[in-house]
Length: 452
Ligand SMILES: [Zn+2]
Image (cartoon, rainbow, N blue to C red; front, side):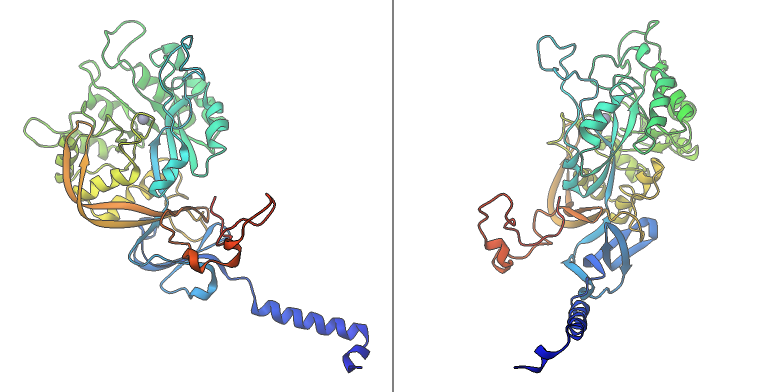
């Protein structure tokens, strides 16, 4: 009989605990969940523009240092030769139904306009981790948008509230009765975590003026709502002789208000002599903010490139993605156009991260600061022969293109189409090679990292 069998039970228990704890020490949980190793970090908010390692723990940025040992992380992703930036912010996007009736396609529907919203999570394909719906819904339709889209999206969704209570595409955007500044402000105050501003758009762009359609009605009511709720207003605008562009940006807009679609065909960005309209610099000096809002109808190289060559670059880059243009533009596509026009990469990143975060008064976004949500984009800068198109169906040749390789939202890898974070299938763990026979079986996956 062996001696250990004769030992009192208590001593056996103590030995067992000691053995177990020494095993635990060896198999200690790693300090970080995820380590992005060797990437070129561009984090304008923190003045970082160099190769650094980025560590994530429990959904937050845990460290950005020159060399974080690989053995400190549960998952290590080699991102050398790639750029690591804060998750991008697209402040002009469209989600949900807005004002469109649910039966918009039926013969008996009030209007037949296609709902503008596209799936929120499509934004993840461009490294975008925060989108802002640009007024698709108003006071009467916001709750539907919240329940239908915002509460269910993986990407973070915020919103500008349309001054029109019904929102967009419901056939009521020209009705003054719909533009109730107090109702608008009360709704914004009810959802301070989600609604970041007011939006006005599409108001009476061509018809004759009458009592119901006066030149500045939508602009004035949106500003009234913005003032009551203490939030910025985003303007989609069509200048006419009775309401000029200069009056909008030099008199009506308040400091911090945002003019989207800045390079659209209808704005006098470039004068007859080829020089940039001096009102733009004057407006900037007043604190007016300029945003791209590209879309299918709001970006012309004849304005954009000539303005860029004269030193005018919009404060924020955004897409205006909606059902009418998601095959034409993406955040990476719009950013690439600015690279193609000669804007340096770090500046393009600034205008797609920290700048839009500041415009919507969310300084905790658009940065890789330690302790903030681990919203991260991994981007590749491709060199080759590329061409870009504008809303006037003209094109521009270029030799650069920016492409998202991985998108991380709150520490979860939500987009990784080339498997940067994955093993070669032949080297996968045994579980990958199993054939589950029941729904409760372990899935045949190569790792357990959170990916949805
Ligand atoms: Zn829009």
